[in-house]
Structure formats: structure tokens, C-alpha cells
Image (cartoon, rainbow, N blue to C red; front, side, top):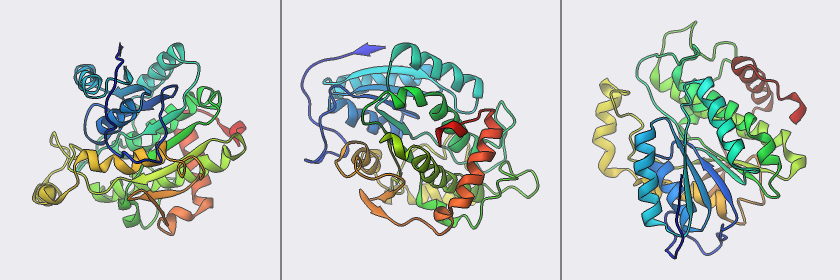
Length: 308
């Protein structure tokens, strides 16, 4: 944990409508690099307490040091959380609960793309396990801290890739009954992000909590690095890098929804380029969103029915 005080300029997503956040407690997953790092930097620049979460302690410390130096108005903490492990998610949630009595902003940002089917510690297909189920459990475990805030927001980082998902089989989330496709698994996980956003917004509508999803754009990050993407996908990704957004530009929509008056006035919406847009037809299927919620509860072993 580290703290810093001073004056600095706003980072990614700066706009005149964004409020100062000196008394705001934020948690950003996948904050050690890419969009998550730039989101943490922008929030810290507004004076927030930012808990930067990721699975690698050493990378987190380096990232937190960078944010502290570039955005000295904020307070920066680290929280090790491996979303591929329900045990790690539970431990991280408990650590956060010990440190903080409330959570004003949760940014579920972490994500990955895999060309090959891999399993998490708990036997989940890794793409849906990390991109959706880990965040589902983390949000559930921190719900009382979110409820304790007077104006909490949850921002789920999805993607326009959700439009490529033709369906989401909630009885086969882990692709056990069909040939594995990394592209399909990623698209379905992003569809899950949008569906989860709508269902969570519905369930928490009477608590004044704003829950929204964002598309950051096609951003030059490490999402397909470390051998995660192979073959044609890797070739196309590498060829496209010069034309992609920078992570700072990719964080702008997240920061807009997290800090702006607009982001605090709507819930259950989908944003791209810092504006509300309509997601795919499948993403608007409330019956599917409810089935995904039930399947997610069964998968991670919790019951959140009292939240509705």
C-alpha cells in the first residue's frame, strides 16, 4: 500500500463534466497494465483512493509506483486477485473488506483472449471464468461495501465483440459439448458482460447504484500476449497494432462512465466512445440475462437472490 499527496493534471478521459473524487474509494481489476492501468491513473489524478488489483504482485507494485508518480493527488493501494481462482477472489474480497468500509466505484476491467481451451483452478473454461465468473463473484462478495456507498457505480468493461456472439448456452458455459473456438469464447464472454450488467442494474435498481457496461475500442494491449493468441488471430492482431487505440485512449469511455454526470444518472446501459449506444439483440434478452445469472450463481457457489 502506498499514499501520495500533491497536485497533478487529469489523465485519460479528462473532461470538464467529470467530478473530483477526493473522497472516493475505487477498485480496478486488471490494473497492472493496459486499459486498467490508465483507468487507475485517471482516477488517481482526480484525487481518488484507487485499489489496483491484478494477479501478479510484482507487476502490480511497479504499476502502482508509476501511478503514484504520475498522479500524486491520489492514494494508491494494491490488491492481489487472480480471477482464475475463486479462492483468490474470496481472499482479495476479504482483504478489501478489512481495509475499507465502503466501495464507491468498482471497475471490472480484467480480461483475456485464448486461442486454446484452458481451465481455471476451479475447472471453468478460462475465458468465461476470468472475463465473467471471477468478476461475478468479486462483485457479489463486495456488495455490502457497494451498498454502503451513497452513490456507488459499477463499470463492466465489455466489447463490441459481443455482437459476434450468436447465442450464449447457459447450460454449456464452459464449452464442454462443442468444439472450442477462441473467437467464439471471447465473444460469448463479452456478451455475458453486457447481460450481467443489465441484470445487476435491474436487481440493484432500488438502491441507487449505477451499473453500466463499456466498449473501450480496439486497443493495443497485452490481451493476446504471452502466447494466449496463436495462428491467424495473432497475425491479424499484430498487423493491426499500428491502427489501434492507445491504452490511455481506450480508458476514456470507462473513465467517462465512472466520473461523469451522465454515468451517474443511468443504469443498465452500454457505452462506446463515451456515448450511450444500443448493444446487440442478444444483449437485450432479459430472459437470457436471468438464466446467465442463475448459471453464474451455481458455478461460483453463491446465492444472491436476496439482491433482487
